[in-house]
Image 1 (cartoon, helix red, strand yellow):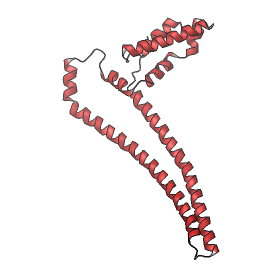
Image 2 (spheres, one colour):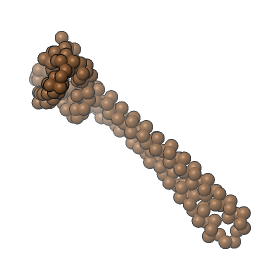
Image 3 (spheres, one colour):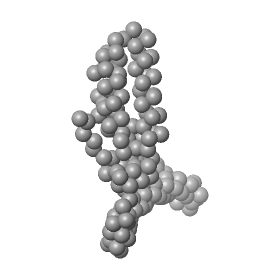
Image 4 (cartoon, helix red, strand yellow):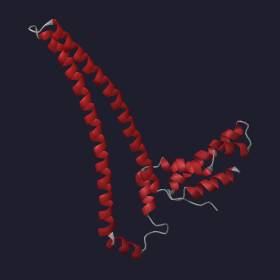
Length: 199
């Protein structure tokens, strides 16, 4: 594929973006191909080095802000006709309520995940504080026997150890929630990316 063919195919796949964004991406890849050619690659090798047009376009679209993708997805290709405006207004009680319900469900699921993460860390902190309190209590209770003191100290150390293990588990839970949040964000963005077929 030549540079011109690559840039044309990329333009077609980015057609849902505003013209300024398309031009910015095209000039970036035009310059990148030219730099690779100056470094000794042939035009075909330079284009092949960049990768598949579809993959490049998908990466560019996934890096766009969600608001840009929504605006370009909602906006008809030929502009808003009076009939389309009337249909959108008349149908707004239906599509708006569905949109609000979907947003509320997604938001509640996300809040639930965050609350679970906070709860796990609260349990971790409680275990560590309880363990420290047992150890301090063992030294402050002079009326107990040495065996009782050792039992309190041992119990405190065990509870602190349990808290440390729970902290490690909580760390993995939070990492999992972050990865899940990112993948949900990518999925939501993918709903607004038009799949363009290159002629």
